[in-house]
Image 1 (cartoon, rainbow, N blue to C red):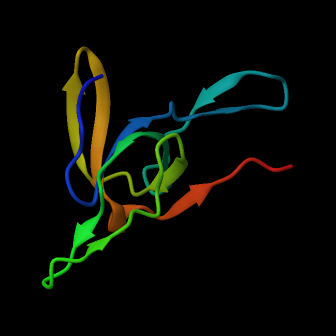
Image 2: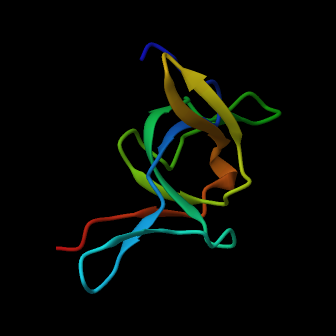
Length: 98
């Protein structure tokens, strides 16, 4: 993908909404109130203040994030679905447990 988001925007590849039952069966999640999970595939440089100062992004490329289901703009780039969000729409950055 050769797309670079501008300013405080993030291009996210959504993860599939599913859960696994105790028997190992994959069950699609239908709860629309739950936030979505996705991977940041590209991030902008950061927001710019009125004074012209750039505020660096907190979210980095490859971070796994949570965001509201209705947030952002859905786009299809080269046959792949993405969501473009502003950084202030991100609810959390998930990290792997060690």
